[in-house]
Image 1: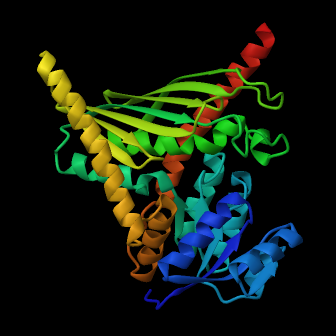
Image 2 (image 1 turned 90 degrees about the horizontal axis):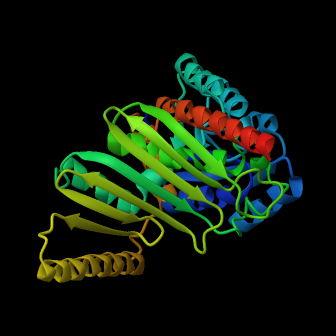
Image 3 (image 1 turned 45 degrees about the vertical axis):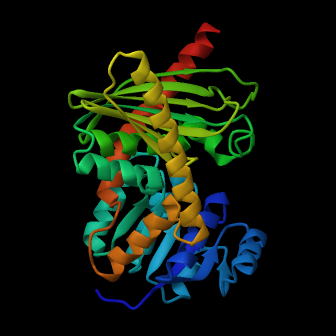
Length: 356
């Protein structure tokens, strides 16, 4: 398939749709022709803000009345499978916001429909394409960090997280609640850097905050990935938002800050007082260098968010009939671990309530 550009429709007008609309606008590889949401007033307002020609309240009407190449699905994850299958059967490629689905069964349905329809399905695993992750991936690939043997991920949010603080948000009705909406990120990062199937070893949750509608708001999970380990800590009680990674290799440690877009290499250090001082200076210098580089890229318009890079690569993959950056099969592998974790969370929450 060779195309000059993509005609796109976005389904779902929630917060994340703005990231998708911005990304499509910046790629210049596709034009958003229509938008759809059950809430007509919201769909109309988004169409006006983003200057989109048409808006709909039904995906069926959207499909029937437009000549499209891609349907970009930004609705809650429990609706993804039915919408993706409907779109692919109608002859459209689909792009799915993460998580791909909430169950393995639904994810397998998308993969199967992709095979039978001949259409392609991609998933937005946007943290894979954040600048520090891209740099770390390159460093690992070039053996500048020799064999990553462990990965720590901290995903910290304040109590003012827009989903957590809204008791009517759809995420609270999912198995695993607010955690289930965001855990796909650390899962696919663990697989990306540790390079094997993930075995969920343990999931522990606790309740610290005062939102009655959240059964738990602190989480610690461990993974076994081949002969390596991964750990995730997530919180909705942090004094600030932060996404921090530490990759432990045999020759060095990589420290990544996704929000501040910085990266630092902590190499082997001699146990001498002078070396400690030099090491601190080196660490500070690397953070300054990252920050100045970010400022330079922003100033010349070369900065791209994870959503922008992922969607640009998705569009290029379709236009060149090439591999997608994150395939439906990749999404399925992530959902297998996510489903396990959500069941563990529910078990933990039931256990805590029983003890209480």
